[in-house]
Length: 313
Image (cartoon, rainbow, N blue to C red; front, side, top):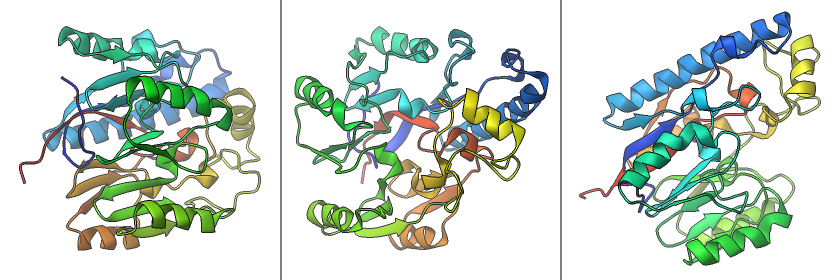
């Protein structure tokens, strides 16, 4: 049913995230609610456009069931944070958004596929990258490493390596097409980062990309429409801290969805990356996410691969 053997096989089935509709913010003050309504509406429009683009490419698209997710939690805009398919194993995090994916779980079980609710907090698509020969993974907090290792030993006893730094792996680097790595530069440990790629990917071209929104004052969420000293931004940082990430340190250009080895999708263009991919026979499509800074959301995060079909060539 749902299976992935290579990240560059043709994408067959994918989950695209969804945002709350405006009537889900009645718990907020009216003036705050107006801003949240606009962000939610425009985010849903952008995610719908992404879904339509993928459908036009022949990809089957599934969406979260918002009616099953409580209003008070972060909506499932980033299913990658909740779902992982590794080989033919479907893993769905047991969190507050999990009921929104129950129809996907039911579909898998109807086809006798094994579904697991990982006991380790870091087993999801944003932290795990299976590159045929080896599974690369990261942890959000180093104290969770033992749990993650135990989970892999039990459910995926294959060659694996942990990325030396913490945080979502897809926020640090990706391999959009064989032979190319796009990476967020580790300013604090750049020599260690370069050593990691030199040791494990000696034949790859590594392109380091700086943060898209670097240079912010407090490194908290804000946007051009909502500067850090605005009432709305301050309210969000105080009341919705669990919803927003640190967009100042995110490289949205490298957070991309692979359709196959010839086509990738991102929310923000990068001319140097585009040219490098073109040299490798890979095309870069851009579909914007207008409120990517609010959600700290890239195209990879906004999707979750469920099935890929082996390329005939």
